[in-house]
Image (cartoon, rainbow, N blue to C red; front, side):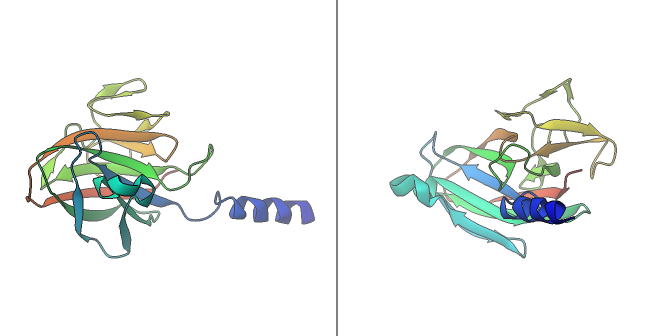
Length: 179
């Protein structure tokens, strides 16, 4: 019993048993697009990427708690120049074995992004999305359609979206803890 408690304490300290938090990054580094946070759903923390120093305003982070039920969230930003930004679906824990988050129904300004409901793909390929690691497409139980994805910081998904200077961009998505 004592060993089990020590293991549980170690996992909590490592962040592996705590409630999973989703993380959506908006990255304008490749196009050198500076971004300004406008608004986001309740209980979402938004910040620029301080580790990028003088380029910190070229990446925004939106972080919030995920529940066991699908919830619709939204984030908004304004680009300061024309270009493309990367929409990145991930989690906050950068360790193998970190909890996955379920994402579905990804929209920009009210329109589904390419394969934003993750219905297209085969095997381990998710059409119109790139990334790193092994994000998974899951059948059944989706918020929209039949498929959704599981992603985290180690297994992230990315899609490039075009933006125009001064025009507010609102990203809506559905998220829950992954199983």
